[in-house]
Amino acid sequence: MKYPTHPDAPAVKTEQLSRTYESLVALNSLDLVVNRGDLFGFIGSNGAGKTTTLRILSTFLTPSSGRAEVLGYDVVRKPDAVRHIIGYMPDFFGVYRDMVVWEYLDFFGACYQIKSRERDQTIRDVLELVGLSEKKDQLIGALSRGMQQRLGLARVLIHDPELLLLDEPASGLDPRARVEMMAILQELQKMGKTIIISSHILSELQALCNRVAIIEKGTLKYAGPIEGVGQDLSQQRHFRVLCSGSPEEFLPRFMELPEVSDPVIEKGRIRFTLEDGSVDPSGILSRLVSQGVPVRDFHQEEISLEKVFMNYTSGETQ
Image: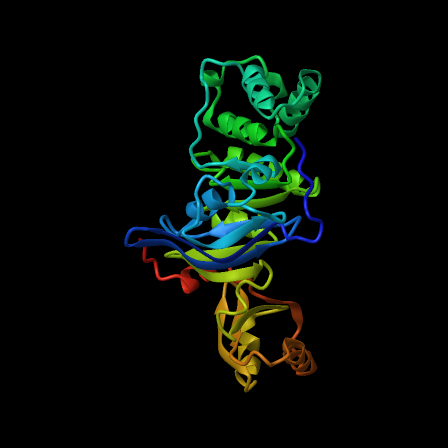
């Protein structure tokens, strides 16, 4: 059965969403919005509340208080509608090791009441998408860990959901398998899917996602665009400058600029800090050039997602 989605509703919206287990607060008044088309990274330590949130959004868990909507449907009041428009992939999922790949997907296609004459083509499409077409007649138990993860992704795609909830989809994969999984997710986003992915591999999320949320002990610490994720940390900005010639010759010019702090030479470049967030770095560059400094490259250091995570969180777990 096809459930129409509300065109003006975001992919996910939570308001004061909470979940408690006796004295343990697993999720504390979460207010979160995920836009349609986002590839959204959900970041937190073990026990931070990521899986609890995804399980509530997938209707496997009811909230203690607050509310959550998926594409306009309340997860408590309209759970059947939510289940038909999402694909949920837990961090550990069971597979039927004695079934072949095709049979496994056919079984789940039947569970979603996809007509038999449509299932064959649907299975071909999802196997091609996840790169398992050549394994369609192979026993699942003979597949590698990476191929089983891809099969799990194919399973959640079988009914063409609009929203994918992926809990550690790259868990336990070798580097090549992780890269291949991330490429599949990028392709799915291009196809118009909204994807929420929780992961501990922050460098990959930084390259993959357009928006992220950081959660610790059930409390949201940050939510916003990946490009500006480090801007809220402090006003400090760090720059690296490559000059023609010896950097030792030009280091005194940097020391003479009152806005510049801690100029040092690192790996053949001059590194310095701007403490004041209102200072325009292009003005610094213009003055250096006017003073005869032969600048070949001038760029601001990007704040890594790992550094942002370490600054936003204290490392406490529940």
